[in-house]
Amino acid sequence: MSHDNPPSTEAEKPRSRHFVQDEIDADLAAGKNEGRVQTRFPPEPNGYLHLGHAKSICLNFGLAREFGGKCNLRFDDTNPSKEEQEYVDSIQADVAWLGFQWDALFYASDFFEELYQYAEHLIRTGFAYVDDLTPDQVSEYRGSLDKPGKPSPFRERAPAESLDLFRRMRAGEFPDGARTLRAKIDMSSPNPNLRDPVLYRILRAHHHRTGDAWCIYPMYDFAHGQCDALEKITHSICTLEFEIHRPLYDWFLDHLPVPSRPRQIEFARLNVTYTVLSKRKLLELVKSNIVAGWDDPRMPTLSGMRRRGYTPAALRAFCDTIGVARFNSTVDKLVLENAVRDDLNKTALRVMAVLNPLKVTVENFPEGKVEWIDAVNNPEDATAGTRPLPFSRTVWIDRDDFREDPPKGYFRLSPGKEVRLRYAYCIVCKEVRRDARGEIVELVCTYDPQSARGATSDGRKVKGVIHWVSAEHAMEAPLRLYDHLFAAEHPDDVPEGVDWKANLNPKSLEIVSGAKLEASLKDAKPGTQFQFERVGYFVADAVDSRPGAPVFNRTATLRDTWAKLEKRG
Image (cartoon, rainbow, N blue to C red; front, side, top):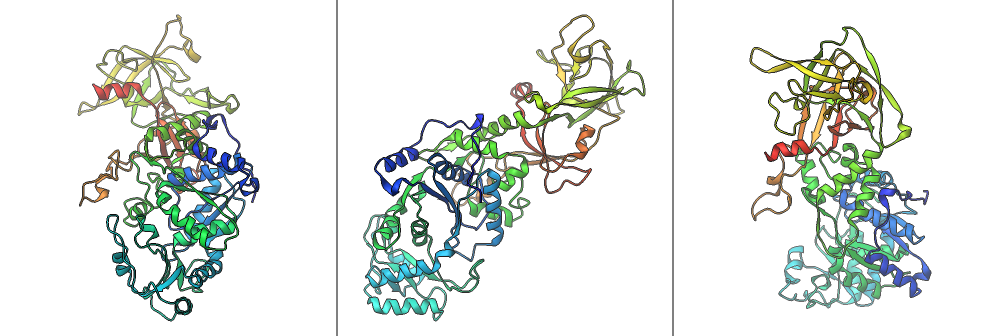
């Protein structure tokens, strides 16, 4: 694997230093870890990575890059009943797509034998015992936040007996759940994590790497810190919910002959409005077919955001913008949407598409004539060049760009008023034609032949500019307009007894089938991003597009001042 990480761009300029950087600075100044900095990103392969993981990835890999260190990718695969190779593959693909490469690839299962030997060490030294309590009894004996725990009747089991039982657990002599191995710490501790936590349980489940070689598996709290130590991680960066686990993390390091001493530092996890970032809940959405899979463009998974058209640079810029904090807070989703708009504004090709078409006949433009106009591909990028755009007697405009009775301040097309067709000519509406039901079906206009390329015949100023597509050359393609998956700003906040899925947005997906698009879009390659001018940012879907038959997903809308004013009115 290459150790190179993506260079910073203008959108990714570092913010003021955060507290994790300060903590590492202090460790280096104190001469700890021989001046090394080594981090890791340790996902459990029980689902697809989401936006919250992007923050952790950027932080861990970013710290390694900043301090000239290394960052490993490690799969915490200690629960085979929920883990699959599919998730392992997707995680590696997502980390690489986000722009990072790990220095080494590890699995907790690489260290199963070492972890087992550490467990035996705790038994021999009197700090662990085999417990015969059932899982429900273990939970009952541990007490609660306001009630201390009570010791198991097997807590004083002799080390020799516990060691024999533990080896027999490994040999498969007992049924699942019959016994556990527990650390002997403090059943009266105010921190429930120190009340004789379970280290190993009996679990006959096929492991995606080790197969059926093991029937006992270490708990996450036991495996995590020791894997860090075995990898010689210097700084174990975790989210804030692990702060209460840190005393246990340190207790294991104090009582085991580990080869290094990592330090755990916690930061605030990411919360975003209108978004759920619980893997359990995301899995429920997938399994209940509420979404079309982990990569559904409405999902906050990295694969879903990639399919929706989000770019790695946008996500890295978003993570840099929100920074790293000590305390939990919620980020407005607008910050994320603005990050992708800012990036795509610089990179996306401009094209024209009419979502709600209204026919316009330019009656003084010669029938059968086609005029080819040079259209700018991206005004932010001079190297993007131009493309030929056909103009003909009949064009499509968006129905929202015409008002028969326009309000004050309306600068789009209306009877007797003039607008400019983007890149082309100025037109004036002369006649409105209706069908038998009274619906407007066609506008008859005239154009000023002297108004090409921003000019007019008499130097007059034309304020309104609207987009259009030549009717003769237009193509059609399905457009998927995505909105928030949840209608509630804080979707996890539901009254007791109410299903959290009650906050789902029934309008999170609208499919537009009659849109008129530039003919050049027929050959759009899957994954290519565009700005549909005055409409929004779109991407050719990477799954459902076919050669000559693309499907487009809306990544983000454009800001539309007039639409907002109309809604307020």
